[in-house]
Length: 217
Image 1 (cartoon, rainbow, N blue to C red):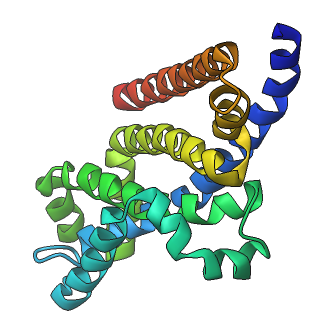
Image 2: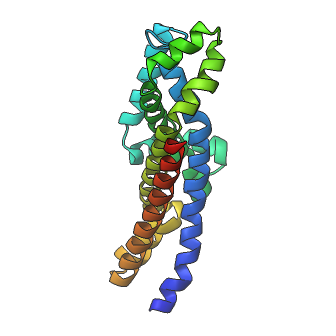
C-alpha cells in the first residue's frame, strides 16, 4: 500500500509544483505593477487618475469575489484559447494565474501604502519623476511587505491547485480525490495532506525569513 503511495506522490507533487510555480510567476509579473497602478492613480497618488483607479479597482474586486471553482468554469473558453485544452495541469495554470493576479495586486497595494509619505514628498522635492519614485522609493521600501504578500499568494495557490486537481487538473488534489476519497483509502488522504502541510510550512518559512532579511537592510 505505502509503496503505491510513494510511487504516486512524486508525480502529483511535480504537477502541483508546475501549476503553482507558473501561476505564481505570472502573478508576480502582473500583480506588482497592478498594485503600483492602484496606488499611483489613487487620489493623492503620484499620478492621480480617479476614473482609471476606480475602473481597475472594480475589475480587481469583481475578479476576487468570484469563487475559484466558478472562475475555472467561467473562463473555459479563454483557457482553451491559451492552453489549447480545458483539462490537465497546463489548463489549470490559466485560472490559477487569473485568480492570483488581483489577489497579489491588492496585497502589493497595501504594502506600498505603508511607505511613509515623507519619503515620497522628499523624492518629489529633489525632482524625481513618477517612475523614479516608484523604482527608487516605493518598491525598495515596500519589499518586505511585497515578499510577505507574495508568500501568502503562493500558499493560497497551493490550496487553489488542490481544488483544481479535484476536478481534473492533476496534482496532489487529484491524487487525494481519486485514490483517497473515491477509493476510501485513508492512507492516501493522510499522505496527501501531510505533503501539503510540509509544502506550505517550507514556503512560509522561506518567505518569512526573506522578509525579515529585507526589513533589516
